[in-house]
Structures are given as C-alpha cells and as structure tokens.
Length: 457
Image 1 (tube, rainbow, N blue to C red):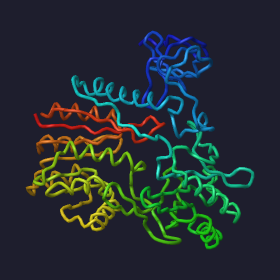
Image 2: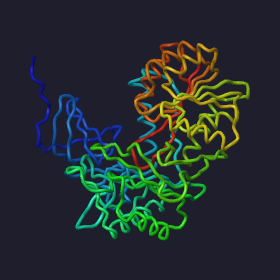
Image 3: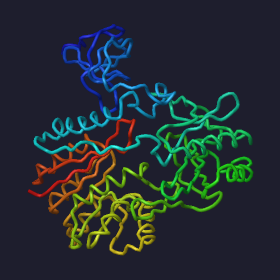
Image 4: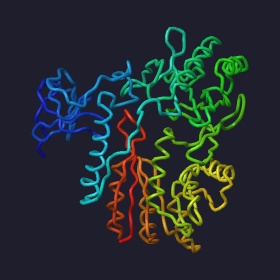
C-alpha cells in the first residue's frame, strides 16, 4: 500500500484561510482537502501558520501571524486565557459564540444524523455570559513552598495558579484563595502525582445560586489532614455563609478526582438550592447542573416539548438526582426515573420528599436493563425523556424505545455529535425528529446543550 503523504510537511510555514471551528474550539483550514487544526483563530480569518504535527487524516498548526481578523474577534477578558485550558472561546464575541454553536449543531445533524429539513432554532444564550458556574473543582500544587491552585495548562498537568476565574461565581474565587492561604499557613502539602506523596489533591466549592449556601470539599490522599481542627475553624471565620466543610479521601494513584470515602468535618452534609420552584439537596458528590439559570431554560424547553396534560406516564432515563423528573412530575400523572449511580437515586428520593412530590418512583440500575423490565411489568410510557452522558444513549436503550413506541421522546443532550447519531437510529426505527433547541449552558467554552423533540411517525 502507498504510504500516506500529507500535502504539507512538518515545520512548513504556510498562508491559510480558516473556514470553520472544531467542536473543541480550534480553527479549521484545509490544504488540498487536508484539514489543519489551529487554536486561537476564527472562521474567515487569514493567517500565517506553522505546521507542528501531521496525522493520517489531519494535522495541527500554530498561529504565527494574523493577516485578516474576524469581525467577531475580541480581546479575551481573562489574563491567563491563552495558557489555561478551562475556556476555549473567549477570543470570540458572545454573538459569534452563539452563531458558531448553532452551526455546530446544524452541521452534525446533517453530517452524522443525515437529517434534512429539521428545524434547528437559534441558541438560547445568557444575558450575562460570565460568572455563572456554581461549582469549581481545582487541582492543588506547590510553588516556592506555598500552595497554588487553578486549571491545568492546555494539554498538560502543569497547574496555572489562578486568582480569579471569570466563569465561576465570585464566591468560588474567595473560597479557593482562603483555603490555599490557610492550608499553606498550617504546612499542608499538595499531592504530588509523580511521587504519590502529599495531602491535598483538589479543592471543590459549591454554591447555592438562590440560597447563597456554600460547601467546601477538601479532597485528600490521606485520611488525616494535619491541624485539621484549626484549619476548619479558620475557614469558618474567614468565609461567612459557609454551611458545610467536607473531606473526601482518595488514596489511589489516579486522575479521577473523588475517592470512595467522604466525611463531614464541619456543618451539614448537604447545602440547598432551587431551580424554579423545586428545592434540591446537594451533597459533595451530587451531580447538580453548574449553570442553574440556563438549567431552568433547558428544563422549561423539555417541559414544553413534553406538553403534559396530567394524564401521562413519563419515564426519565438517566434521571440523576431527579432534576428533570421532579419538573415533569409537576405536570404528569406518574414519573419513573432510573439512574445507575446509587447515591444519585438516594438524592432523587430525598429531593422528591423535600418537595412533597409523591407521583415519582426511582430505581437504581442501567436504563437499558430497568426500562425493559418495567415494560414487561406493564409500565407503558407515553413520553420518554433521556438525558444521557456525553457518549449518548446505549444501543439497548434505543432498541427498547423503538420496541416500546412511546408517542414522544424528549432528548436532552450535552454532545451534539452523539445526539445526531442517536437521532438517526430513532428515525430508522419509526420516529421523526421535529425540532431542536440548542441552549448555551457554558458560555466561553465550546460546549452546547440541546433539547430535541422526537415523535412517533
């Protein structure tokens, strides 16, 4: 077989025009059909780039000089934007971000889903696309004897120390600074990935957007934190409004953040927050949406698509801590939720009780196993809601939907590519994709959420 030959060579300097953005925010330029991905550039821009890496089907470049700028290019507001891996689109104006995200959804629906004539609405954006994240979790390192904390630099495990993050709520910045200062003062050592020594691995902060309640989670390698009593007392004094300080112990050599053991060091085990009228108890490891304002927008759209009149049975696959289930239960006759994480189901039951909602039932297990069992027991869904992880729906669940034939499927997605793939499967199984509503849950980043309305043909 002939050896693959790219139309450019490594270390070449070439002039290109960018025509698109990848799903992770890199600009795309093509040389004789061969795509080159370059960070910090935008569609329509002309530039000189250096080719830095070649793969079989695509290569990577680095921006050397910009000849012509996009009208949507802006100066990033964050001083460490270029080094930090947390955001990808701060050099693109917010108007430009919404246009790019809509195009991303349209492109995958046509290219991967092979769907034409599906209505894709303009993205529902935020009035204030900064300071929206209610949760931060940052790795901790050491520099000149003191603790540092922040995001990893792009494509590395080097921590860039961060004083403030413009997409986090301000209180998150305060918590991180105070915890770093206080722990440094008492000689707490940062965890070292290479030597597997040291104590403090990550600091996580959670904030109730509506209630203002705050939780701090110290994720440690060791069960003991030196001087923990004094550290906790100092944190409580330094941060008014703190309701909970929790320790999670992760003694493994791993890049997974949480370990299995969690204990309360001070205050309560949970904090509370509201989305709309529904109150949620949030523990250290609860999955809870990080942008509560846009979560309400997303769930309102899901409710609108479900169009409930009070007589329906609804199944919520991948129900998490019951967020969508409890929204649906306000309008449906009965809601069944299923989720593989046992702690999430405990949270879901607690949240139902907290709100006095009695027409929901939750079960632990894989959606693709539990839902067919319900079907055999005679539980027939009029509407099925799915909100799967990034990898999309399991094939067995899609087969179940096609066999069960609910009148409607409302698909909430955090990954347009796997959404498009699953829409194709449902279309081939007798469903029609009516419309898609993208929602911008994560401004300044490349992510976009979608709600799709799918009806039985």
